[in-house]
Image (cartoon, one colour):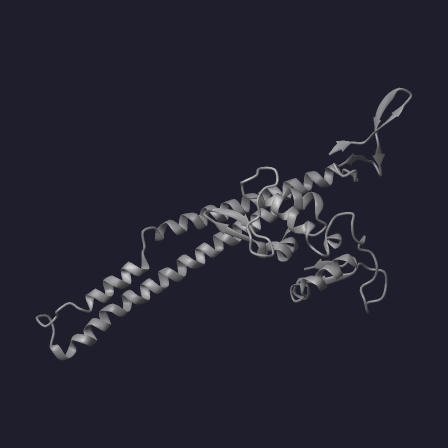
Length: 252
């Protein structure tokens, strides 16, 4: 983006709109830059990014406790234990019951460890993808919806693989970088691609949809249109987009 200027009496001046300098992007779109708001947004994004980073580091630390655990090998060892000749240790009639009693706590421990490991991995993935949306410059600069709502639209297109967030298109194909051929797309590149292919993109892009004014249906008056987060989550994507385009905001 570059600053829009004008010539007056041989001098070059920045174009000001509503007290804010106007910038022009590569597509010719003009956008007034609200510096205080941008500063607050950057501070908020930095705080969110730090929170996600700390959560990721904690999850990684917790996962280290399970390094080297091979559930398949542990179960195999338990199965072999059942074949041990225990005739010299216990009565033949009690052998099966004794082995079963010895194996049960180990099986329960393995199941618990496997479940806990899976839960930690899911938590780590959730923080990484959520953090990517919260710290996305593309989302902050171009989307008229909060990061968590953007994630509800496009989060299913991202997965965590080998410690990195990887994007997929609607057909299940990985997205590759248009600027670095052969490499996977960065998060912002992928999000921009997904937004550009979204049928209702005008309802979520800044400057493309409704200004958000008007009254809430059935409520009377001239207050803003609002809906609860629970109501928003129950809608399909088409309905969500239509509501956003109509100027609805999420309250609570």
